[in-house]
Image (tube, rainbow, N blue to C red):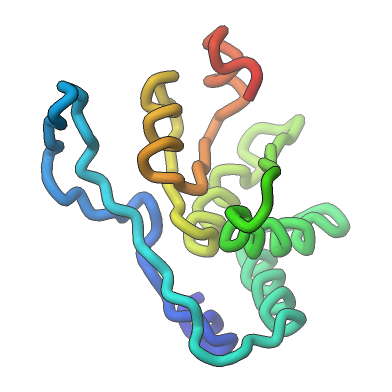
Length: 160
């Protein structure tokens, strides 16, 4: 995957699951503990990037690992690019990956997405407080495996 990304003008980087723990954590003056997680920062490519080529290459990489229904790979490619530019808008969106079948590749897709999105943080079971702290402090692209069952089980998280 890294070679294809270099071809379109991006350098490969570590994913959220490989984020470096700077330290076990630090206690702030207000008594709150701050996580020692640092997410990778992607520097913009210095030259212009052909958007059509970029999107085509992302679709190609997605389809290497996952079988999609019609237009799903293209939609995810647009969403991946969106993760790098969402801060330019007042409103953003989320993607929910659902399937009536178990073992159909949803976790595989999350793993692939974690290599392509901006500031990935992967979680399979996150507490309500950790969810809100992660968003506030890290501003990640939060990739949650089994989010449907984990979020529905917590009343304060049902809106998500």
